[in-house]
Amino acid sequence: MLTGHGDDLYLYNHVRLNFSSNIPAHADIEELKAFLRQQFDAVSCYPEPEPFSAEHAIARQRGVPAECVLMTNGATEAIYLVAQLLRSEHFDFCEIAQPTFCEYRDACMMAGLPCGDSRADGGKCAFWLCNPNNPTGGVVAIEEVRRKAGQYDMLVVDQSYEAYTLEPMLSPAEAVRHANIIQIHSMTKTCAVPGLRIGYVVAAPQVIAKLRRFVRPWSVNALASLAAEWLADHDFRAVKDMEHYLSEAQRLNRELNKIDGVRALPTATNFMLCVLERQTAASLKQHLVEKHGILIRDASNFVGLDQHYFRVASQTKEENDELLERMKEMKNEE
Image (cartoon, rainbow, N blue to C red; front, side, top):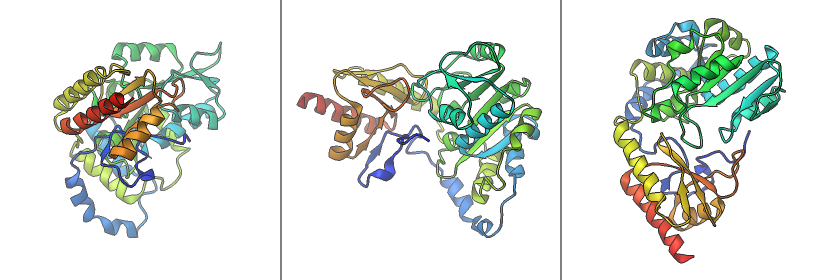
């Protein structure tokens, strides 16, 4: 596991504004909290060994049969389960285009699967696609996703950030019609509940059945299972007005590009990858958090990036403006 994931808020005790996590800091989850407050007796009993009730609720929400859904302890557990499945199915190589979420590579390496950013000659090959991609915020069009499914023996599509873009995504209903597509989804992201660790896999029934062989009993705790069922039944979204939120993200992107020595890459999501021409991301992060209580994501530990890259996720207009102002002040002090 990579040391230095985003949202390392736990390392600091004076953060006022958190731009380091891709999950919006102001998501309203009070309804879910109110529900969970009445469910605490559930911690006195073992949860379902396999969270079938939650899986059925997710299946109803996503419009697929229940046997096509596997709930996991966050999307990260799903990633490691998929890597184990690929190993058991005698895959020879995993292609992973960089930069992207590090856990794909780590999971493959732990499973003993060779991986890289270009396909090896011959053998069974799986392609891992983060869509929308973390950390760039880029989105691969549906037609390209379908094309890749035709090129590889298995296409693993992590759609954890699907709720934070207006671009069309491959639907679960389409995914389950293909024996070589595995979708990974994240209620952690969609519903802004990272502490509960709620992820799930959607795939053809025969693929889900094989994945279940690698799941530990009680991998999903009782409160997470109850929360997932409630969230699915209520079709809950962390951000109610996504168009407005993403419009503000685009404004932040444009304003960052106006700062001397800063380049914000194009994005189709709420977060964006930026590069500094002269300064390091570590020094910018240290200055912002120590002087102003503003936390950003040093992205230098993504494969393919160097010490000049950082990532931020859009917050409110007022908070975005403060980030911009503090970065301008720092440039003026150079």
